[in-house]
Image 1 (cartoon, helix red, strand yellow):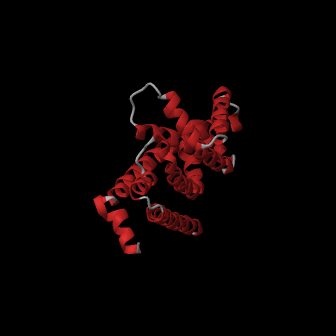
Image 2 (cartoon, rainbow, N blue to C red):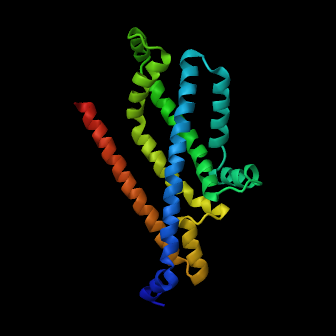
Image 3 (cartoon, rainbow, N blue to C red):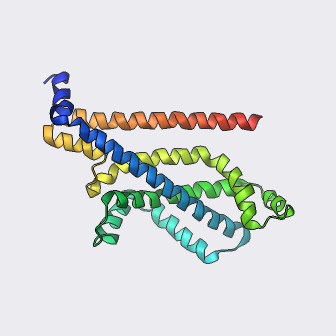
Length: 229
């Protein structure tokens, strides 16, 4: 079978290309929502940990945050996904996509937390003293002075975390979600041809990652240009 015939069989016949298109939409939806959850959760944990390290406050909350970071970063994301779906939500009629969003969001939050915490701790303690001298309490100093500077410093790293998360969602098929990878697998199961379906999935992921990486590079260049001014 030549390439054209194989291409027609895998993607044109029975509109099999729709498996990839629909799967891509699911992958992007999961990624977008999981990134949002991961950022919010990560910033919350980072602020608690940084506050404890600098002031000694929130000792108990910091202990729970460290436990969360240890467990999530110490176990594979696919195992976390399976536990959340087959154990935590086993008896709950819930959308598989929602489960994937929660699982990937919680996983990403742990890595975002450490990225942001590093950014906060890199800000000189004199900034806190400057905030106090302006009459700001600790919370307002953190919100208006520390976090904006930390966010600027770690923005490229956060963008790269989003790229990593995009690729990690390829394991969503373990709970029978028809994502991009699963779409290629469905085509393969129907045509008994593995090369083109899997190649198409790989190319789509590669294109997305290259585009996002380019955007991250432009962002880093813009930040560097602003620093030189």
